[in-house]
Image (spheres, one colour):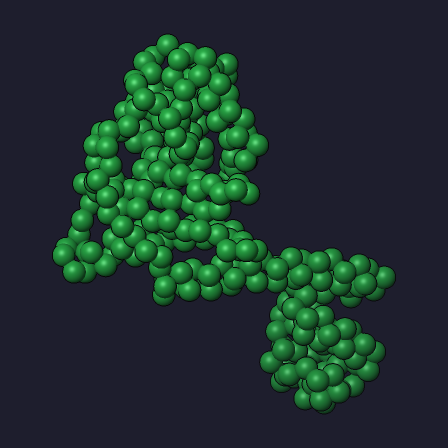
Length: 279
């Protein structure tokens, strides 16, 4: 029999770890002195101790280690499954770090923001309600289809769009779990309430004359935005509002109602313009 100290030396496990595994029922001593409570281990237990150390050094959960000890034939399967979990977790953490670094760089050097007086603008829009918890995605195909259907309907009703489309997102006061995404085309005249589209909510309205903060971001070749990070143009708006608050006191900007316009070039979308109305 080996004392707990001797067994620790033989297995490269600490005495503290051996006591812990005893308490967890993972590696119970072969004998415990009823008077001194000193633990003693048999030579045959060294194998289990070596397995425990190897798997725990790899952060394999205790219950998975217990399964490997009970059924050694499952050890490779346990390690394969755990490696898959670890690889996925590492990839997720790498993505989160990339996003955090991208955000930090954007906050250090936010893009330019300008203030402008915007004229009255009539519009018609398709309205989509989305979950604010990020569980619902609105794909490019569905939005492109909605924009195309609305464009055709406006043209047929004598209100052809007069400029580039924009999207807006706004809070739903009575439904905090929802946000309202509007897919808008500008029109020269008010559209009225007669425009409808199958299976779509259509809304017509008018943006009043207003003062806006505007940020533009032109994409560079090969640029990809990390998932979960605010758009650089939005970061620029946030930074400008923070700067103004420090210099002149808080100024109201309705960040819950940001309008986004795609900047188009010869090869399609080359950038984004974001505008927020100042109160």
